[in-house]
Image (cartoon, rainbow, N blue to C red; front, side, top):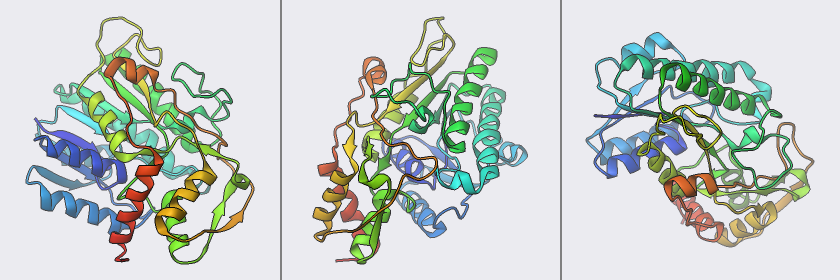
Length: 333
């Protein structure tokens, strides 16, 4: 039976589809290929998947359109879903809030409706975000913490997705796992993320914008570790046994943090990029931006306990791997 991966042309979706294909799965990928960032980059990811694996099928559609979703995926026998598609970006949610409601709320509802109506779906794994922790000051962030103080609309939509999933797990006993990702980076990453922006600016002798005066920390998580966690969750649906799960549900619904379990200073990450590129950055220090949090740090004890997840790639290894790919992608020797 095929696995559905939404956002297959996206960063995490591409890598997840690639891992599933490598282990012999049939994968159906969907994406609406919007222009939030380079469509050429998204098509390049899809081309990599299509050229390397005969078991990959791509369907271009917008999952926030229920009719298009139902028609485009009818009679395909999908029995598991990895829902990674979303309107991403904390800062962009301030500029274009309606895009987030349509993609992240309506789209999430549509995927749950598709799953429950299919009668085949054994498990829906979906992307949440570390941004749900919002204004929390207790570190590290744990799935047991209250997350009712979001400071961006993006974070609010992701917490709303978790609440809707809890409701559907209760009403329809639909097994679901929500994953709060922490600052994902690596080859084929997103151009709106700090790692890409910094590398591009340093290589082209432009200033990098260092927000929060550089006094920020992030739990940078390499893409391979993220995908290992996603696949482990996909293979282990939460049981419908009345026990309390990670995140507090007694239904078949779990919520996990997936991070590197280490909070790195922003300036240290910049120094590792500088070293990998071989030149210093021109730094422009700026205040915190609306919607940003100063520190993130993942408590991953729940997913370690339940699934044996353990990240293996720190920034000293992961950042040079990203920079090497970045140079090849842009044709830089």
